[in-house]
Length: 198
Image (cartoon, rainbow, N blue to C red; front, side, top):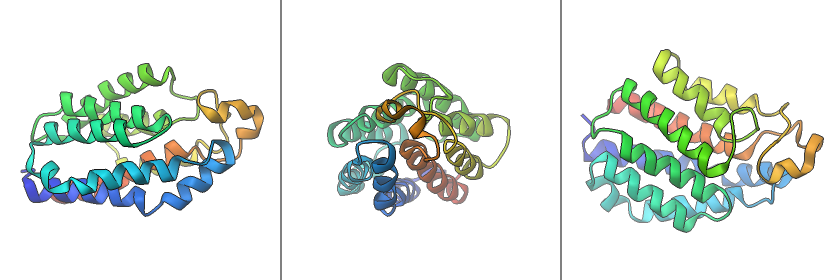
């Protein structure tokens, strides 16, 4: 049962996992982007934590929609709309007490929404390259955290096709995509907390 205490733990653990790695995300983004991914994500997720009491009191779908709105408003660059779309779509698609199958299906729908918002596809060195294998793992079996970590690593040899990194062409090869890394951090934190909660 996903009660208020467990919702609070999920939101707080996920937010802190990215905030604690903000410097790493910034360094990754300095290599192939405009260097603000860590700071932007930190700002957005600190705003989420500032509203933690109210968010944890809401049913999961409503909490996710509210988190998505906060990310759209507070996170700059491309990440705000993309992560906001991800969270809001999950909020629309998930029941209050989701099963693993619910999570896999909802993430699949959310990935399509992120693709449409970012005009991007899997294989273009973006957060989608982590989210898609995670949806597959949720649906067909597998450890989402391990899958996410491996998928983020797999963006290193890829050439960026979308986003700021695409301007670098071949020079984007050899660097992990910052959005893929932040997605992997979120998946790992949510997976580990949800195992205890679900």
